[in-house]
Amino acid sequence: MIKLGILDSLWEMIFPTPRICILCKKKQEQIGICPACREKLAAYRQNHCRCSRCGTFGVTEENCPNHRKWPQYLKSNQSLWPYCGEYRKTLLEFKFKGQPWLAEALAKLMAPLVSKGDIIIPVPISAERLKERKFNQSALLAKYLARETGLEYAENVLIKIKNTPRQSTLSYAERQKSLQGALAVKNEQKIIGKDIILVDDICTTGATILTCAQILHEQTKGDIYGITLCSGIQ
Image (cartoon, rainbow, N blue to C red; front, side):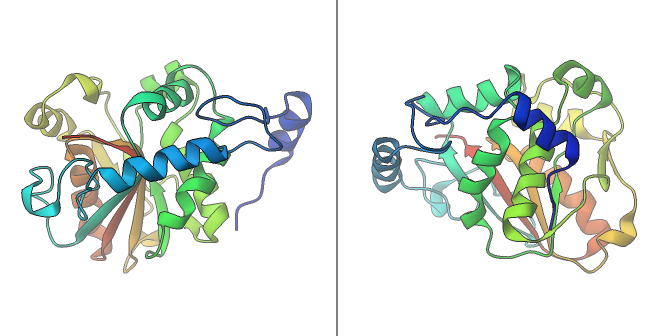
């Protein structure tokens, strides 16, 4: 199980995490989601069908195009939120506005989505993007998700070896093309024979999770399960 390091604890003492609802920003006893936002999310999930394979909102598995090219070893992707409204806003604040302190609270909310798997691996970002953003949002989510579930965390297995355009600006085909030759596996002995939980912040077209799963499966021969904060909407 992962424990917070000394620097993490010191940072928390100097800059304590705000006790708010991470969606509506209402003050409360601890960081998380307030009862009103929980009810709103529950109603949204009840009124919007989701694909049981890739997690896309607004579709069923039978009419969802996003996972049609997924191999059998890429079992599923599960997401906490739809990529819209306050959920989208919170993800963007976390990812682009220097709010890594949201990761622990988000991972606690994502933890119930984990039901299978042996080892948790984040989708990597390039060195250039890491320098620009100061942290890998998927790695932070994966780290805290491992701590919440007690599963093994392995950050330096799937790595990005070249920079790629922002995936949000590309079509499915363009995303797949841009990722060719951009990813690699090292320390492969850590994953041989294991089922992998692949963590990312968002799954829209499914191109990223598919490419990552293909590369990982070549080494592990096990199953791959995606866990993401948000999924797209059809």
